[in-house]
Length: 130
Image 1 (cartoon, helix red, strand yellow):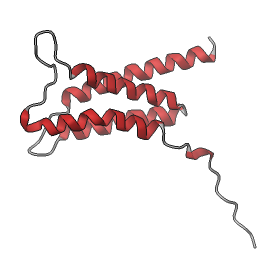
Image 2 (tube, one colour):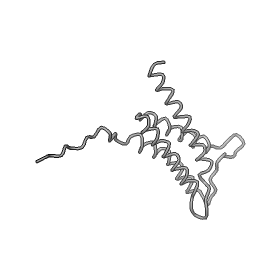
Image 3 (tube, rainbow, N blue to C red):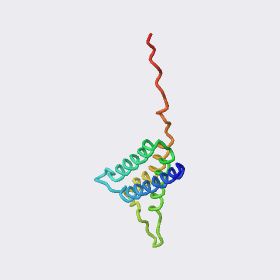
Image 4 (cartoon, rainbow, N blue to C red):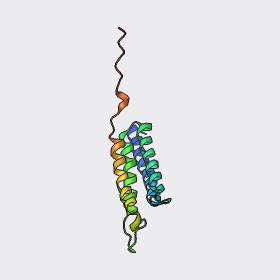
């Protein structure tokens, strides 16, 4: 198998794993303990960890983009109103701010992680011995 095919398969796997994380976080993002949005916090941490891992372990921005797009796609899919007139994951009036925040998490993570400059190519200035 050529390296191009392997990379494309990696992108597909990153998208599917991102969609899995996005699904889990979308379903659980509204969980609260009192006022603390525990589900939102755990969703952000989990999805951020995934996208950061995809970028750093593979040294490929496209993997991070694919994972982020999977998160965004799952959030979009599970936030839509179905044929029966109800949404799978619907925001209640008192937790609407959590759903709005979760809507922006995927795109923000994708932008921050995928487009962060590659600092591994930066070399420190040699110390002057004099």
